[in-house]
Image 1 (cartoon, each protein chain N blue to C red):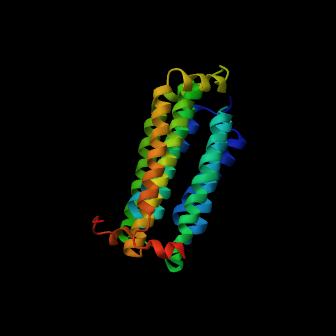
Image 2 (cartoon, each protein chain N blue to C red):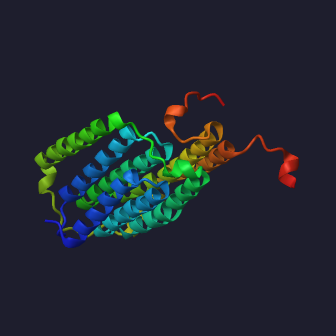
Image 3 (cartoon, helix red, strand yellow):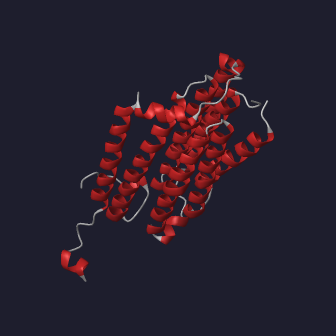
Length: 101
Length: 170
């Protein structure tokens, strides 16, 4: 293989940093979900890369579990966005002052 | 050393990750997020993991990105195009991002993983299937239950209680 483990790891680090920037700066609920997705994908990339280079099948198996659980997380997150939008007519998290149902 | 396909995928993935967070319109942002997820699928192909790559394309690009796109369309038009962020925090956030990139990158470059290379054949996807039904079978069942629970939870959360039954019948 011409690509080395360190290359994939560095891409993953860059994506993690971008995701944390998005979580720290953005106040839009949907954009924060984008940032979380980017971070999860950075983690998956690391799992598969280490699984390839060790080599061990556990990396890919764990990445498949991680993708499925991320799908569940997005479904719940999007329905939370819809509920909050219905309550506040806004997606700015600074407006979400109360968690009272 | 990295090859051309790797560099192209890096540009696509990181560029569209930044675009997903920085584009003014949320709709274009979610399309850029699709680019990031597709780029990650390309990395999986480069890592000889075609099964995970196709799973990523089916689940992330095919369903999650489309779900996000539909949720964005439910939001008011002026909110889609309005950029909500803390101006004061922006520079601190960029600083945090750069510090993290440099610090974590230096740690990884200094560590032993720089010398790891492999000549062994890639994992066969038969091994993954065998893993799923032998060693990981409790986790597989638990994941099915979790997915069912999360879908039910999402439906309960998104249910409208202010709409009366007779209105729905009409």
